[in-house]
Length: 393
Image 1: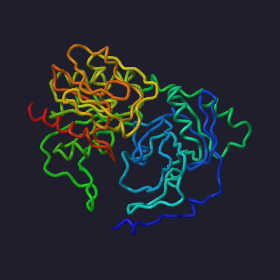
Image 2: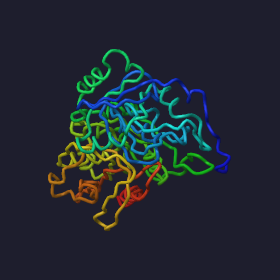
Image 3: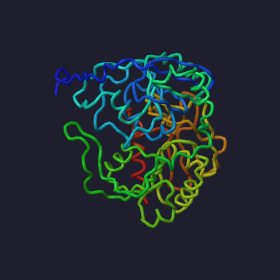
Image 4: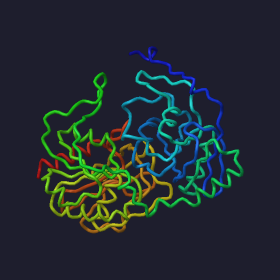
């Protein structure tokens, strides 16, 4: 289909009466705009994401559980919503903050508009606020809790109530959210990557068996493993190491996920046992932090975290600068790494740790998202590195 043939989606639901909304931060700052989702209220840690594309993937990324996402790109919703660009079964972000919601969407795969999508999922959102000012505030003062009121801003002193809700919300530090978003039962994953005109392809002739811990796994991670010949068994976050090793996997994958890694004692203990067994192990995002903790390091909460699809990272082994997708609010403290762990990648934004590898076991991890959907894909070869470890076993 040619670009000029792409459907223009314009529904009556895109022209409703303006419903007022406000965003209040725990520091007392208030932004007023209009509702673009469900009416009601929501609280969470307010963070900003600098990606220019991928709002549907961001909303459905389980790593955003408990967070209100501010998108710095001004026009969000241009290409609408489709049935394929999701990273999980539902929206996990606690709320959405944007500058402008276009009234018309255009893309050959469009099946719905963003506002309707949010309303059906009962997700609160706000538009028509100064997201540049909000981003600067979060950059300077750090990520903080916030509350969105939508449709109730004229009821009494809504701003005061919203500020109180934001201040009463728990800090992300100390929260174990991996079990909240994890699957309840093990399952098999067989879908491979997407191709134009074909959609998501079915896996054929897998050569290896990989057990993937679901701490909030993104679907595209599983697709990337399947594309490389891995038959993937996904298991809940709290699965014991003994149960995983009983499956005789060729490798173990540690997924991304939300929250603070330090309270996840069950995961840290299991990972330590799996790594000690000599099973090839690969971690991403929260899985990276958990591998660090299982190896004896410590983690710390970051001021703003890294959220975006344009973060430069240095590969210390090759000297390459790689543009990466990031979504995390905690980082491994490199000063606490033991002697049997080496640093493989470093952020060129702030020097924080982006990758580690064990020198005594076939285990490594990366802080960013090498499976990045919709992109970039510079760091995708890490999946090949994992498969190479399996092949050498």
